Image (cartoon, rainbow, N blue to C red):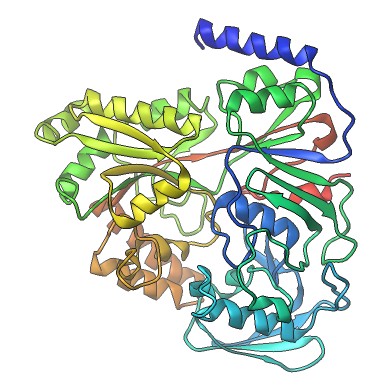
Length: 493
């Protein structure tokens, strides 16, 4: 830690001691980015999804540790055959408005999400469902149009009232929910949630305020001043020592089901050359980055999924750091541009990567963009390199969304294959893994896919960040789930 950093931290602590700690009933959660939409039919960004899953609930939930699906709104899920799922709903489940949940609500929601008229980005998740039929007061049957290995995980999508399922998009999130919280108000920088008296989970004790504070120093100061209670993955390793143990603040940490990766435009020279992509990977010292910038609270990624995940093979390893070898292969590479978000910690990481690539002989210019502009550039293919994160690695079939050749943005398919990875074996392996419910068979397909990715290297997996949360005394005991969600807030007492 530099002397200037130490002085900055001391200043923060000194300022916090002068700040007035107001009496608050709500727990305040700090995030570094604005909310985009809290309509669960259209939310795809990480923080949007985290908030919507406090307000809404699906037929299944995800275990906070294993991420395995379990019945949530449903009480029972049975497969009489490969293409039929019988669902029984829990008795007496009501929406926030007090209206009783019915099988018709479930079918209307799934049909709306599947409809091209609504245009939900989650259409692919339910596309395999051919028919949803109510068979009783609390029972329904799902018939698949095609085999779908991930059906139970897919049914984590929130259930809405039948009369609201096909309504026009509501970015404010004012839709009847089944979750532990009810949304009171929302803006891009603020969301207020109050405990719900109905819903599928017990009534929480605390109200919540989710507040966007883009500057990291300001987030740290707000915590130190006693004006905020939870900062999930919102404080960098540099500032964490100043917060841990200060006036009741503590840290909670767990390995994260996420991956940060270097995206490369595989259609654009010189990044269409596999050996050049491999050289870029060898120029990045990931061990040093995880040890220093993350203070050991991250693990080098060997594949997109962490080693502990059942779909991650043990025989796939990361490209070794080899600056000299990389420099030889990169000697004639043209200057490159590296895109990243405007978050200060992400900009710092991008600059470190750019410096490492520069040490290997490639001039790299870092450009930070607002998230919406950044994603639009990536979708259009107007980039060389970019740093991105998959924040929620819940189900390995997610890889189809990002790497299936039919999912290149702007080419008529569904997906976000921004790398423009077009290898025919990728389609074969991902399709096979997504249509077979036998885990051993799926594991073999994903292992072969991981080896293909290691050979072709359309992206460079960088690291898996721990889920690190700063919590106040009032929020003590809260820990994020493995994929970084916040449902544990509802269980605080």
